Length: 180
Image (cartoon, rainbow, N blue to C red; front, side, top):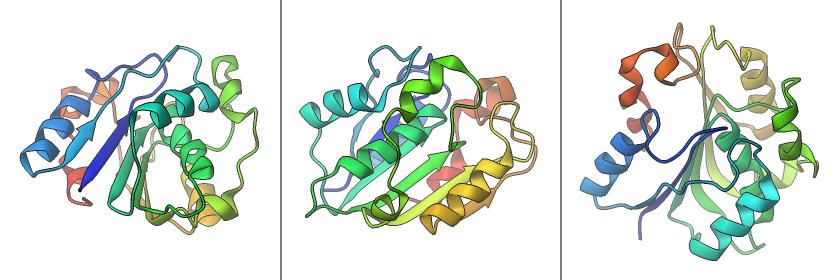
């Protein structure tokens, strides 16, 4: 069955930004969708997130995972921890990053080093969305992830962090929907 897991970023929840809109769009198209409120989102931790997600969600070859900001980094932890026999259909990382950005609350995302070689084998396709003026995540992170993961990098100029700080337009994200 077509299924999509959507992960919010730091201090976020399922109601933030474009998540509810995307959930509704995908549900109307026949997808099973889950947008969990990640535990202790003010201090993201891949192991804690993995525990909650693996208890409540089954991944298969039709699975798609979409993550925003630290939710995009959480995808890396999920892919790295998938059972050996599972590779998902697609991973979409929006404003993902490769280190803690010098911000203490993000340090627990990187306690366990990522095995990018393994991660890139766990999704048939990896797509990255980045902006050239993100106030939190520089475009260099998108370029680095592109190289590490063999991913497709989509740069949308002037879109900030793809959140409501960039404007009310990010109650929706139709550009992302095109890639599903």
